[in-house]
Figure (cartoon, one colour):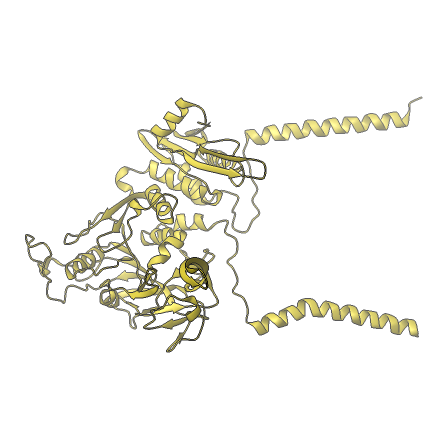
Length: 526
């Protein structure tokens, strides 16, 4: 006669064994066939359509050599796995045309030399916890080889940026060299030079991003035409005036279809003298002719600010560098959520910004759009010189209440600034005089972006890259970069609305409980 308890125990063990065998089989199949189900609203954990298309049309094998150090501590402990997962998912859509090699060069001189030849450089790495301190060089890059062409992505320290950088690298290595995007950076008027920026600074990071997306060329044309093969030109915080001859060259570059990204301030801090000084960059009239008025004021916001380090007099100590929230380092979340370049940015940081305005009516066949405004709590002030945050906390004379435009984009056909003016003198006495008959009086369809803070460039790298992609009409990279950022932050409601909302969240449940208690007592008393 069989024992029921023994049969039940045997069935339990068999079920457990079958469950384990099924789990092992599923894991094995999942490693052989990559599949991911992404239920997030912005599909942040899956590949974008642009990423899939970047490898779907490969004509020959693409080799991705991942040079990435293993066993990194937080916050980089998941980065290697995330990179390999992205590549494996790309491989699903590329088939046999994408090959992946994962290499840890740490302690391997031959692998270190191969990484160097591929253009992947080591990065300084420091880790400190309660029980250990570690400092060494590590690798976080990938080399892409496609036939005789090669592109290196030497630093991938951000999981959020991995897909953007991979797609950018793949598109660049697959494209013909002449198809590379070329961006110019104007120098010669006190502008910062990103190629000379110290390591681990925002400008150095921007330089790396620009170089990964194509060619970056610094130019100081003085009295020479701006190269026509530049897809876009960045004018970043000039401190000295552009001469009339240079304005002609800038104007004709725009007329020939060149795109412009201008980061311009009306004021600049002089921390040694502890005051603001006015900037004369010579672009006020030129911009106004093309549809954007840059006002000679400065924006102050006492409620929405970013921290900065400023020299201050501390009682009993003297002059000290103090980090504090400064009313001239304003922040804003008033971004046009229908404009692709800014709609998914959480906020913008705009130190020492001035107000902008669109000329009404716009000249030429132009469409203008305000991308970013300051917060309603901001004010525009003319003739402000002090940097002292204590003085700025008090109301100032002739304040103009916000919000104020601080980033404007124009697209369409521009009319020439130079064509109706007498030709200026050449700076180079040996150069031929200007011939107005050779000037273009109307542009090809092109685009222009003005941001009224020279210091904002280093604080808004995603905005800079998105603006460049928009200028050269590459919306795909903007779309990828915005994925995974989540919903845009909400502006805080007015104090009265917030109080009523709190009463509704807290007071209504408490009042309901009190009413139920009173009803219970009333029923018991009856």
